[in-house]
Image (cartoon, rainbow, N blue to C red; front, side):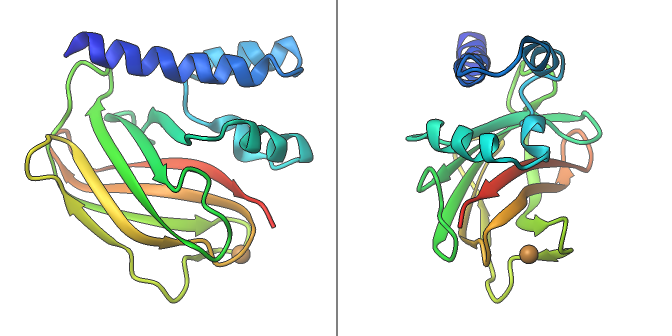
Length: 175
Ligand SMILES: [Cu+2]
């Protein structure tokens, strides 16, 4: 089990290192390492950030601590790079903050939010189900980015073994 979590975490950092090596400045690399693997680099959209996302294909995996630090959440999207105005699914795995073990969650709401416009995914009703066989695994179907721009994917753990907390992943949707 531990090896699996280590591999997952390493893969996350490896993917990030590859992306940074595409020509960004050394101070940004330091910042990325210090800030963990939480996708905070995507908070300020820019032309570079856009090409960064395209380079991350074919698989989009987001991973990082929840806001209050109670959990570490890893998210995988299907399709890997959802386009604007197309349905996509999300799979989230919830771990203890130190990645030592998956954590039981019993009520989770997944949604998208556009912070600059203060709206969510409009006109859709994403459906989240908890895995019956895998601890800490949830799957959400029917997510939908209504418009291009800077979104957040939010995994809101309303009830979990380590308390309530939310993981927020910035996600840029191209035009
Ligand atoms: Cu908007």
